[in-house]
Image 1 (cartoon, helix red, strand yellow):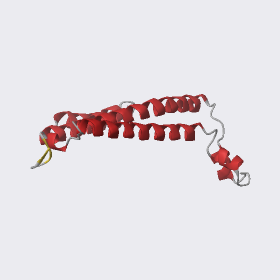
Image 2: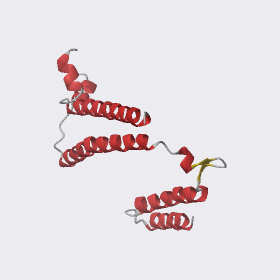
Image 3: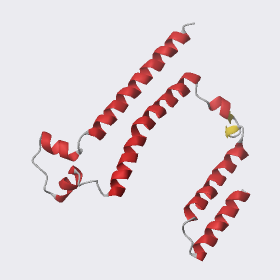
Image 4: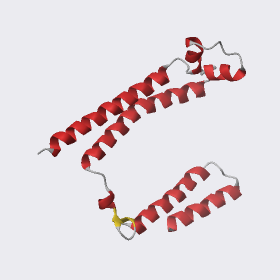
Length: 151
């Protein structure tokens, strides 16, 4: 609680003094301190007075499946965002099909206009690949649970 109050006061001082460069990180610290304080105050309960953190936890195979999916998503999404960020900052990101469609100069309906609306198709392909990987991981976990549940 003390960290949150001090961070909030620091944000106010920074704003009044006109030094806005550090306002966001200090404000993030204030919010994180409030959330952390709430979690510490409730420990070991998730929903007082009955539901504890241990009682609310998912089974181990579910947690493993969730971590696998998060890893797959990170591998697919983080590089894509990094490339998009770099292209945007470099000014090399040209007009997309969405911008053309919004201006009213899109082509007639068909495969060409659909390709223009989705850019070059890589985002759609990656989304489809991610969906397939998630389904494969879920099926693997289901089979693993079935094999281990029979013992």
